[in-house]
Length: 337
Image (cartoon, rainbow, N blue to C red):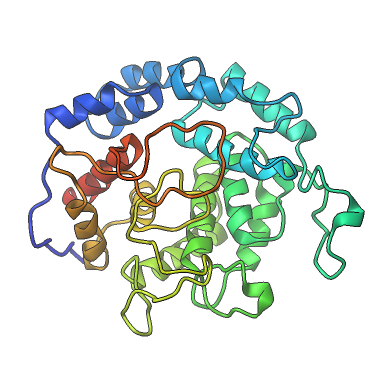
């Protein structure tokens, strides 16, 4: 199917917006060069290599503790570590760099789930089989394990056992849901996007398998059938988000995203996966286009209370490098289809 024509044309970014992005950080700059300005592979690679030694990437790497964790929650530092490693992946830290091998080696050797909690402190009526298991073995919720797979596959860890678990947890509608163990029979936007990103990273790293590809494509259809933001049964955006116990925030663009779904995150996944856009993403694309400010940039919205090792951008409502980069390449993906 051909993409639906938006009510207004998707504009190419002006040079001032591109220059603003290029003046930011190496982690933004190399992706602009690759995705928006068409620089040579050599120039892109040279800029990407700076992530390990300059700017945000270097600051995050320097903040890692000797026990492999990054600061966040004192009792459960493994969760802040998870979110921080996702930042390094998004920045494009070269997995083969000395800095990446050292950081991941420390995580592999010492970081465990619930590592600062004794067995006596654990709830007696909950599954504690993952207590003190290695970080890359994952835990029990697909929204967590999808992100562990994303990190592990990117940095060269063997993620096949965790991938097999995720394949077995896919629901009848094609999605995933962390509430499945509590009786939920329908997928969740939040859990599904986390798993999809993990499966895609696994495929890119290993070549995947027919089973992984089929599961990922079923998950993509789960989002596409819902127009990336609506209930399949009613056609409306849900009035209540059971994952966050509040109104849906899928129309607000966050970065870092943590485990939360939003429309920009979903569309950027589709772009990365090479999905051909059709009319099912048109409303979501229009939402992205309309959020562009007069200065050509996109704002930072709905900042999540999920600690990471470095605050890279400003307050809610200020111009966002990450949102602008992702929005521009999503619009480019759509307009080029």
